[in-house]
Length: 384
Length: 198
Image 1 (spheres, one colour):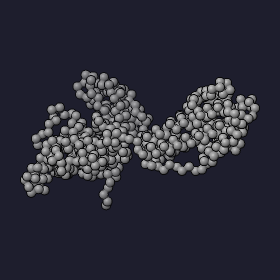
Image 2: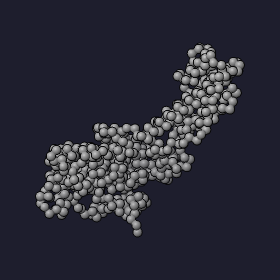
Image 3: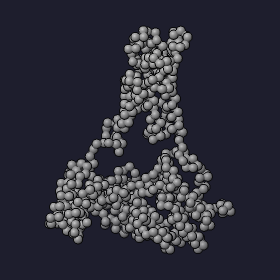
Image 4: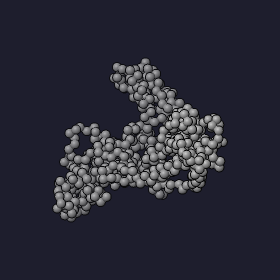
């Protein structure tokens, strides 16, 4: 940091000159009066929106992702991941891994339990475990539902082992019970490390968990009569991301349907649910962010909207005054429905047939509906 | 009666209180003028830009959404207007005029504050080189440096004016100062303690 500072230190004299750069005195009161003399009600709403936009382009070698927060900078000025983001991702990854392990243990226990009853009864139940069982029986090589699942690999390997089934089932049940007990304990919420506001980095860190939830739900055994007694898989905690309840209710159904169809894309609906940004907005419009879809009409149309509306019909209006020497003026009155209520033409075209032509052309302008009863704007129609 | 905040003045001006807007003008016109003067390097253009800034701000009062400070919002208009003037200039207008209005202030200030003619001369020379160094910067770096280094805005406020994150403002200020330092050293104004190293 001191290197960064010293490399740009201008020296005390230059620093003092820069910080206290004087400027010639003026008659400020006279200047202020001159400004006030120019102010008038007609000015309101006349300022071009471009003047309110961010003014300057980026420098050619400017790092593009410099954050407003206290994100550390490397010497090259490129933004690195913050410790908070790393910690949050680490916690999420650990929790997801542990849940996955618990579910796999449960699935294994359920599979062992299913191998005891009659095969005909098991065929009638389209649980993922049964699907695996069928796959094992038909092909000998597991997995036609989703590749790479350790559950299925284990499931395929189980029948080949020479151990008695009871001996295998007991440790599995014990493991599953331990996992259940672990999840019943209140998990401490990870403390907000920097801010509770969702940052883009956090969003990307959370986003992968939605497919992960679907994938877990895919492997999740549906509660059946053959499930191990005392362990209800539905009591397992699901993902703790917002909207997980809705996803959790959909996931088993999706998993079942996929198991039936043999498809490997079960996460369509949860993705759609997670993609709806308005679903978790507070119901009270006053509590919503300013830029959210509040649904209220603007008090009046924006200057940009009015300019765009008039611009789209102005060429037609100019045709009307083609050949005139002087420009014509028109007062266009928009009604609250966004349509033109009245056009009054003055100037060169006033009293001529071109006035009605201008009126007809400008009447085609449309803006979005607004709350005020009407809104008038002056337009100048210059000859082509 | 307590002094009204900028936000209150803007709200009052929106309701048609022209006196409130006049107060806002008197409160910020000097800083806006100084900003315009440094950006434009022309007293007449700076005066016009200052006047135009407040007229345009008045015209856009209904669009001030209150998410930023009123004065940073006005600053943004001033920067945009000044940049428009610069872009509209003829290409040969880049040279600094001999009677740089920024140096008039330096001269007046040093005469009042210094007893040594030599000190005056050095200060004026330093001011001139500083101005030249700033003029050699890109518009982006120069504007950011003026906002932060000359006008004393915080990085957050400058970020509001320029519509960029604080980190970007910090990077620009650092880059601008680095380049300015090289410019000063090349002209014999090395920082104290570095004269021998240069």
